[in-house]
Length: 150
Length: 116
Length: 138
Image (cartoon, each protein chain N blue to C red):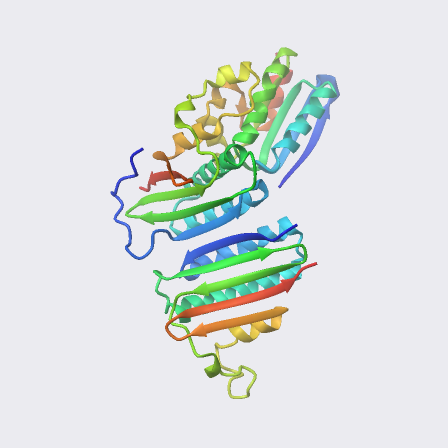
């Protein structure tokens, strides 16, 4: 899995501008959503854009809670950075990594016929972000969301 | 946080749910329970009034997705109205705009049910 | 319930202080912390963070301020740390002394001690500062 490449000329002194570590429980997600929105608004992004970013972070974190930590508690760490007009958000967790090969683009009509309730989270992220990467090493899994800011 | 209130029109088998707040991981089950309650009471024409709905994520969308078939099998429908721009964009993104009737005003949604 | 921890780190910009309001307002809802208590905590945490930004880092936004919160059934512990320039605790002016009463700043640490059940401040010149605040909420 290729690492997101260095179009990013990252500051040598800090890699992120905001960092949040929370227990991987849904009651803490509002904290992550708030922080995400505040970060985007502080950086001058429009409300609609900030809303979409917040939604993507929420979806990614919800997926970690739902799937990756099925068997026990854990923590989710999220970092936010904006450098050179590229927004980079990374979610770190120690649970079961997502198997990218299992993803299939949802057919909503089929989902409706099947009365399916889930499966839209990743679809939403893929359509709102420019890129989503998954990276695992030494038990640490990363979900990397990237978006160019115009 | 999510608060749901409702208004019913028995002669039309119609219920309007007013969604106030956020439908997400902590509240989507409440949303689902409300919808199920309304359905169990026999209302199959449902309007979701989203005027005060600030946020919805895939868990919330999934509730609608999971129930619509059952509602339509009973010759009913779930129609939506009064969404703000941010919420509408998400419905549009996942294609719900084509699969559901989404109106600007509650009146339009009501008319869509009562005028056949 | 054992202790649960939340950790927040942000770069040294005053605009990031609203993260502190937001964090504690959400924690108040999660743990049912009474409103006056939350407001005290927010005030003390922000005072400590302002000190870190303005004095620890001289407003250099490359500095990182770390805020960690440990919550158990009855109390919270909030820790605010920076790797800034630190200061000599013994050289802090007493804000209640008459010559200092009308000075525009210098009340932060005084407030932190007043509004917490327990406050510890550790600092060494060149090594940064750590403020640890404890507050009962139940």
